[in-house]
Image (tube, rainbow, N blue to C red; front, side, top):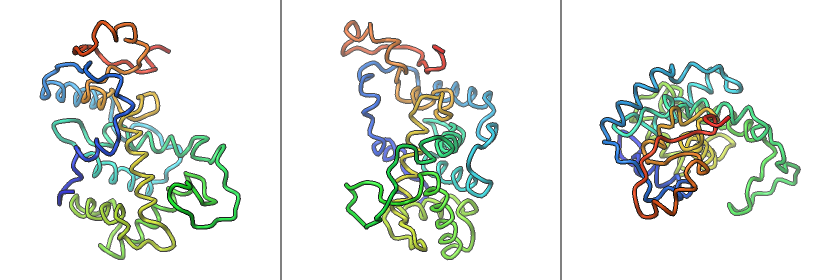
Length: 241
């Protein structure tokens, strides 16, 4: 991790591009600078990060999430920032969903500290977990830096996230590493998932990767273009609904 930003290459590697493996060898040859220009203009036309009404996060929580996803996905030649790509919107919607409310999640005790491979071991719903984690992170940030996380400069935000990731941030009665892991996973989902869920605005990550989008749209061409580049405009679920 660099001093001023979480390397985007590392972020992409952490994402595990299994979901886009079907598009290997099918990436478009759009020049990077032209692709970025088109993406940025389209995102601006979509009225970017604060246009969507929030469904779960309060003002403080929203500010934290925007700051965190922008540190994880900084604006550069590859794409706009995480919040400009709709990642904060995706996270808010996910937390407000049935999943965020703990649907189909076993949460009855006893709550014994287990091993990581044993999965989630808390009474909190995913939404409650993130809300509690944000509160703990901001409390730790105030003790460490004298201000809430979203008020930190870019370098300190990355330093703080790194401390959480490595388990060095001492949250009060909360696991900083577990919180970072869940927040990072949500950010990846928001950046790479179908835009219908609120993130990946204008399919920015798909354009960056050269991923054509909805597999059914090009499945009949897989054999014809095997080991060849397939140049196509990506398509979202919304394009067929």
